[in-house]
Length: 150
Image (cartoon, rainbow, N blue to C red; front, side, top):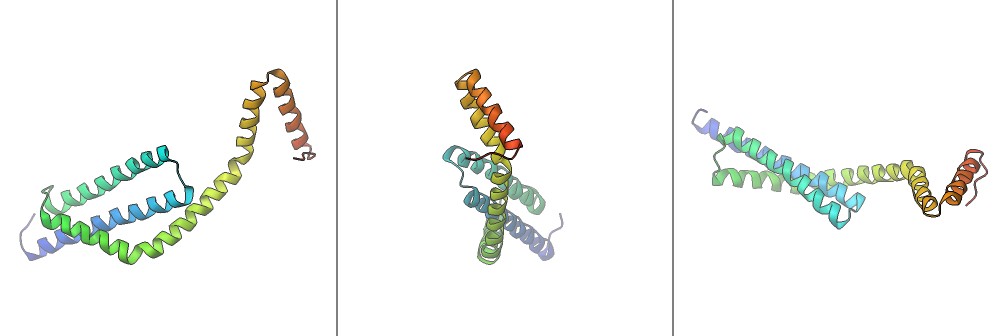
C-alpha cells in the first residue's frame, strides 16, 4: 500500500464504510427481531448470527484499509461510520425494514397455518390412538368438501 495523504484518506473511508455496513446489519437484525418477537433461546442464537457477519465486515474492512493492523484511528473511523448510519439512515431504513419484516411474518403465519393445524391435530390424534387419527381424517375430508365449521 502506498503512503501519503490519499492513501490515509482512502483507508479512513474504507473503515467508515465498514462501520456503516455493521450499522446496516444491526438495523436489519433489529427490525427482524422487533417484527418476529423471538423467544429468549432463539434471540440468543440470533445475536450470535448477527455477531459473526458483523465481525467479518469489520475484519474485512480492517484488512482492506490497513492490511490487518488494528490501529486506534481505524476503530474511531468504524465508530464514526456506525454513528453516521445510526443517525442518518437508521430511522428511515429501520422503519421500512420493520414493516417489510412484519408483512413477511404475517404472510408466513398465514401460509403455514394449515400445516401447523394438521400437525397439531395429528399429534393429538396419535395420543388418542386410532380413533383420534380417524377423527382427524374425517375432519380433513369435510374441509376438502367445503363443509368444515369450527
